[in-house]
Image (cartoon, rainbow, N blue to C red; front, side, top):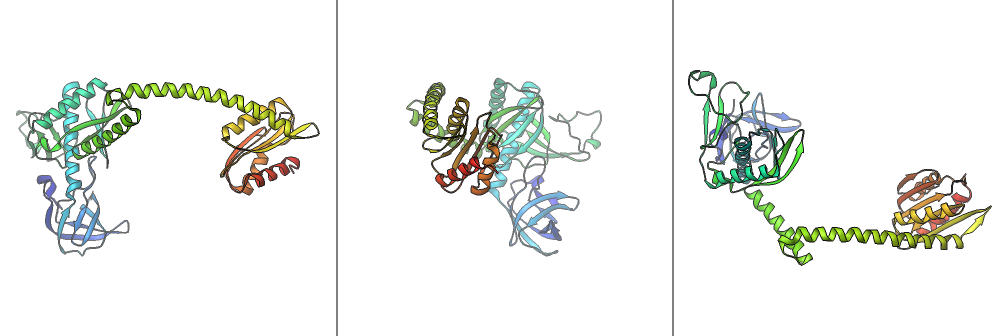
Length: 400
């Protein structure tokens, strides 16, 4: 059985050990040691990485053999090795995990809202609360957790066996009851929280630096809170600072005026889109009339084909729709620059199947698209506009 150094000394960075078992795990070399400081993925906290001898530790798992270290290169059973964990990653995990204890305890103490889930990601971490939390509650819990951080309280580790405690004595005041049997490893934040936990934590709350809630969302009747601690909080602040600085410079406003400036721009953008839409519709109607007049007529049906500048797929579709609703016609419109957009349309009383014409064009020129017998649209066609239009004309004239 592996002696887990991180249980009693999470600050241990280097250690000596002996390989008690060597094997392959999913086609990768792996070993079990007689003692280790490497933390395996467990309880929402990711594994440690680092080095064992000359090999990199790329994954750490916990199974019936003990703590399994997955390596970049094999080590021999019985070999004496020196281990070194990636301290930056470990300390980051210690900050996040201890911060989670404080934030969860704050919600529990202030609002009796228990944590039912925890996950530590590479950039942010989340806790799932049993009930929905208001924005005021989020702020108050965040303030309370940071108060404990800045008071630099002691964080201690102790082990107890509930089965050996005096039944008439005081009960363990755990924030959340543990389903684990036997000896429990307890993490205690002096005067604030006591939790059964196997993870790694800082020795004093001040080492967390800061806890910042960055987002929240409603989930399964509760609230999922995204948060960052320590160095992650500093990185989030820097990103926010750069974003705000860029936005205030672009909009020529002070940071406090950003929300109002953005709202004003959104209103202006909506008004501008409406104006552009009206102008496009008027221009499309004019363009549709011009194309109809310049087109040829075969057996009472107008054959309209053209490559148009400065029109996107939506504009081509609008022009084609106007033509086929005002006169019996078959229309093939192509954008003027590659990769090409194409729209095929026909009036209700015309027998040409637009989606079949489009499919034949896509088979020849590539791209994607689809549609129905009266209207089909595609994009990403290669080649040149003239060749595509020539092919479309032939397909319209001779669908077979």
